[in-house]
Amino acid sequence: MVTCMKTPSQRKLEADLADGPFKMGEANKKWGLLEDLEKTWPYALFWVKAGQRQYAPDCFLLNLHVENYPSAGPSGGFWDTESGDVLAAEKWPKGTGQVAAVFRHGWQNGKMLYHPLDGGTLSSHSDWPEKHPSDIWTSEKIVVDYLEMVFSLLHSGDYTGV
Amino acid sequence: MNIHEKEPEDRIEQEFELFVHPEGSATKVVKAGKGTLLKELLEAIGFQTEGVFVLVNDPPMELYSEEEIEIQVEAVDLGTSLGELGLKEHSHISCHTCKVITVAVFYNGEEVKKKFPPSALISFITRWAKKRLKLDDASAEKLVLQIAGTNERPRPDVRLGQLGTIQGCKIVFNLVAAELIQG
Image (cartoon, rainbow over all chains, first blue to last red; front, side, top):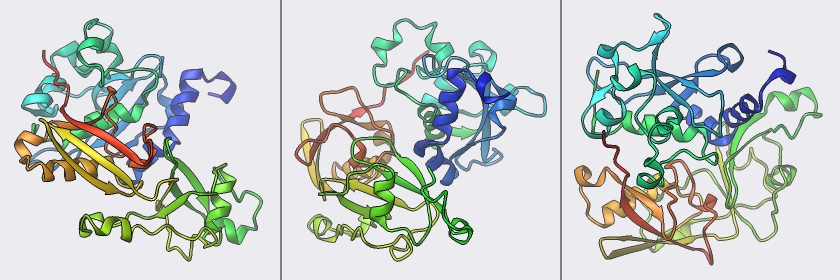
C-alpha cells in the first residue's frame, strides 16, 4: 500500500510503533511486531513475552484489530499463525484471578480480551467507564498500554501456563 | 529522528538509537553518533538545555541509602560527547529542571517519602513503596501507584520526570488496588 492510501489510523499506529514507549519494550524484549503492518492492516500482529512456566511457550502472538485506532481501542486475542486463526483453547494462556478473567477463551470465541482496554469488549460494556476509570481505553492511550496489560498478566502470579 | 543525515558516511555508521526521557512528556527515540555532544543532540530535537539537569544511564538506585540519593545523582556536562559518556545502543537520557523529586506515597493512612532522580522508573518506585510499607508479594501484587487527585496510573516503564503533574519538584501518589475485572 502506498503512503497516500494509508488511513489516519494506520499512520497514527505506525507513528506509535516508531516511538519511544514501543521501541523501549522492543529493546527490552517485552514485545514486538511480527509482520509488517502494511501486510496485515487493519490488523497488527504482535508477539508478547510470557513469564517462564513449565510446558508453556515463552511468548504468545496477539492479533489486534486496529482499524479505528486510536479513537477505538485495539481489539483481539491470542493467535496461531499455523492455523491462521485464534489460538486453540488448549494452547491459550491460563491461570487464576485476573488472568482467568481477562484471558477467557469463551468470550467472543477468543477474538477479544475481556478488558476495558479492548475496544471490542468495551463497546458492549457501557458501565465500564464508571467501573474502570483508569484502565478504560481513551484516544489518549496508545497500543503500548494494551501490550503492557498483556505482558503484566503473563508475568503475574495469576498466570500458570497453558 | 536522525540528527546527522548529512554527515559523512563513517560517522553515520557509528550511529545508534537512544531513548530520551523529557520533562513531562513521552520518551523520544533519537539516533546519533558517538562524537555528538549531548547539548548538540538535545538542541537538535528542540529541547531547552538551560537550567536543565541531564542524567544518563540508569543509576543503580538499589545501592543507595535514602541520604545518598541526592548526593549520588550527578547531572552530566552537556559539552561531553555521547561516546565519552559511555552511551551505547538503547542507553537512556533523562532531562528535568529538578535534580531530584520528592515522592510521597500514601497507603491505608500511612505515608512513606523519599527523593528520587527524574530517571527513576515507576516500576522501581512502586517496588520501593511496597517494601517500605512492608507489603508482602501476595497482597501487594495488585497494588499500583495512582497520582493523587487524578485517575492516572502511570505505566511501569514511565520515568518519574516524564509525569506532567510534578510541581515544585514534589509529587504525591496513592498506592491503590488495581481495577479488577470481573465477569
